[in-house]
Structures are given as C-alpha cells and as structure tokens.
Length: 71
Image 1 (cartoon, rainbow, N blue to C red):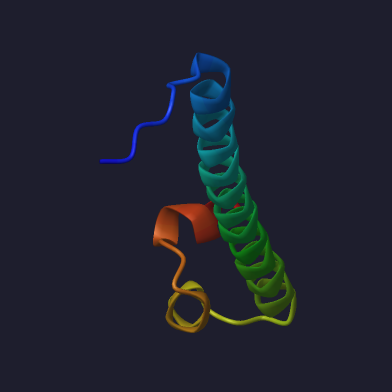
Image 2: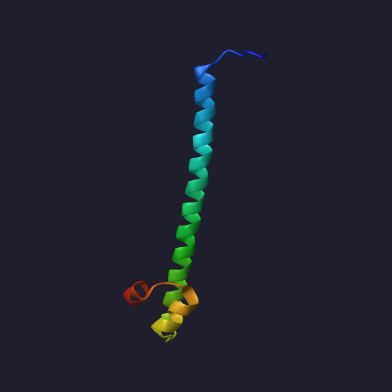
C-alpha cells in the first residue's frame, strides 16, 4: 500500500487551479455569447436602416420582436 503525506497547501493549490480554469472557461463563453448578441443587434440595425420589416429582421437574426422594436 502506497502512503503519501496529505499536504493542505498542495490540495488547496490544485483546487484553486481547477476553480480558476472553470471560471476562465465560463468567462470566455459569456464573452462569446455577448459578442454574438451584439453582432445580431448590429445586423438588425443595418437591416432596419435599409428598410427591412421587423418580421424579416426577426427571421434573419433570431432576435425577439421586443428587442427589434426597441432599436
């Protein structure tokens, strides 16, 4: 049987690194989602500026009508 001494500092360091990686991944995903949403808003504004209907903009961007009408 292999026995190693438990070291709280090592355990905490490993746990911190795991939490840091999880938080980093979540932050990146949130940033990407926000970027995609902002891109949809820009496309919607451009379509509306060119005279597209709200329904057409909804179909193209996937945004809800309330968001489109607020632009």
